[in-house]
Length: 429
Ligand code: ATP
Ligand code: AMO
Image (cartoon, rainbow, N blue to C red; front, top):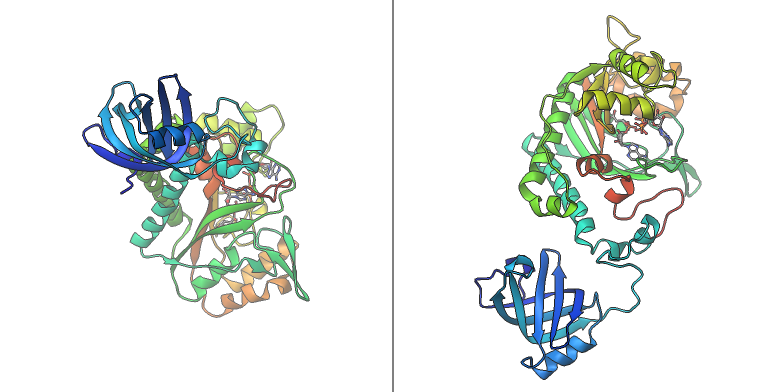
């Protein structure tokens, strides 16, 4: 019976493994194969004088990255990876690999990102690349676990919609019979409607679509958002949930992904909670002091501003109390100073990871705020209706999965955190 390569230890006698031919070294009388599955690598050593003829024949014919199945005796050997090797009695070529390979899986020949993404299935055979997706899987599973423990309902909102949520730009129109329709930018309107439905605590982990025109290292056209909405909660309550979630996800990775972290080769630290709360006005002061381009109260945080503030903070932090003028219509203004909103961004020193707010739950105020942004309340009728029929106070946020993984693992490009990234130039594979 086949066992995972990581389970072949020097103290067992026999093993059968299956995997890909990672490397071959032929030294004349001796041939060393490295066989790889998703759990690890094992050396298979063939001594030409001793090996069965069928083994020799298969070993001679096999090409790198073919799938093989090997069974034999295990020998403790200090020099081999994992301190053991396999001496095969059988060596079967299960699926041959064509050559030349479009990509060098052992990374002796470096490949640029485009080449790697074109042959992504091969690219993710690299343990270092696969490790990112093991971590991402753990980060996702941890989120489900966290929300389940806290009694959230898992919802699924539509991705084909009739209206913009985040201001009207950056929408992908789609051909939808005789109607005008778009890919959804955010579950925002739907998660809020579920507060009127009485669900109280909801989350969704799903795709969001944004027609970002420019290629940047931290924007995708199809991203994954972790969204929540909570009734009878304010912005502070949901900030607490957000920092707890992020710390929980990091802890899960520390617990379950030690090998992956070692493959990626980074220092891994679980961020300490609570994250500092930095008022927007102070964030602007820091940026004004540290960057060359002019920046003033009322401006969005530019990329250099985000970086300068991040450098000063040196850890995850919240920027709170944003001017209402630069936040979406659904953000709740402070009662005592409506020019400021109960909204926040959660930041990693490198970039923004999440935005959120307490929401406006009063129907008439919401209509006024939609109008004040120059939008037409008529196109939000389906969204506004629930606000007239008993909408509790509520708050929530959206957290970008790829940015979370990217910053957690020190990746330079957000595309490294997506199996099949979508950007302006790429819809295949
Ligand atoms: P928001 O939170 O407003 O929905 P976002 O998550 O894209 O947008 P960031 O990526 O943190 O926000 O944007 C911060 C800054 O990055 C912006 O002020 C702008 O300078 C720059 N920026 C945002 N989007 C783009 C883009 N598509 N292309 C180039 N630069 C961008
Ligand atoms: P926002 O537009 O700030 O807020 O998006 C929330 C988070 O989603 C991630 N994100 C992206 N990641 C990669 N590529 C993109 N193009 C992209 N766009 C967004 C970021 C960002 O911080 N409705 C609000 C959330 C809320 O208030 O609940 C919203 O969508 O990490």
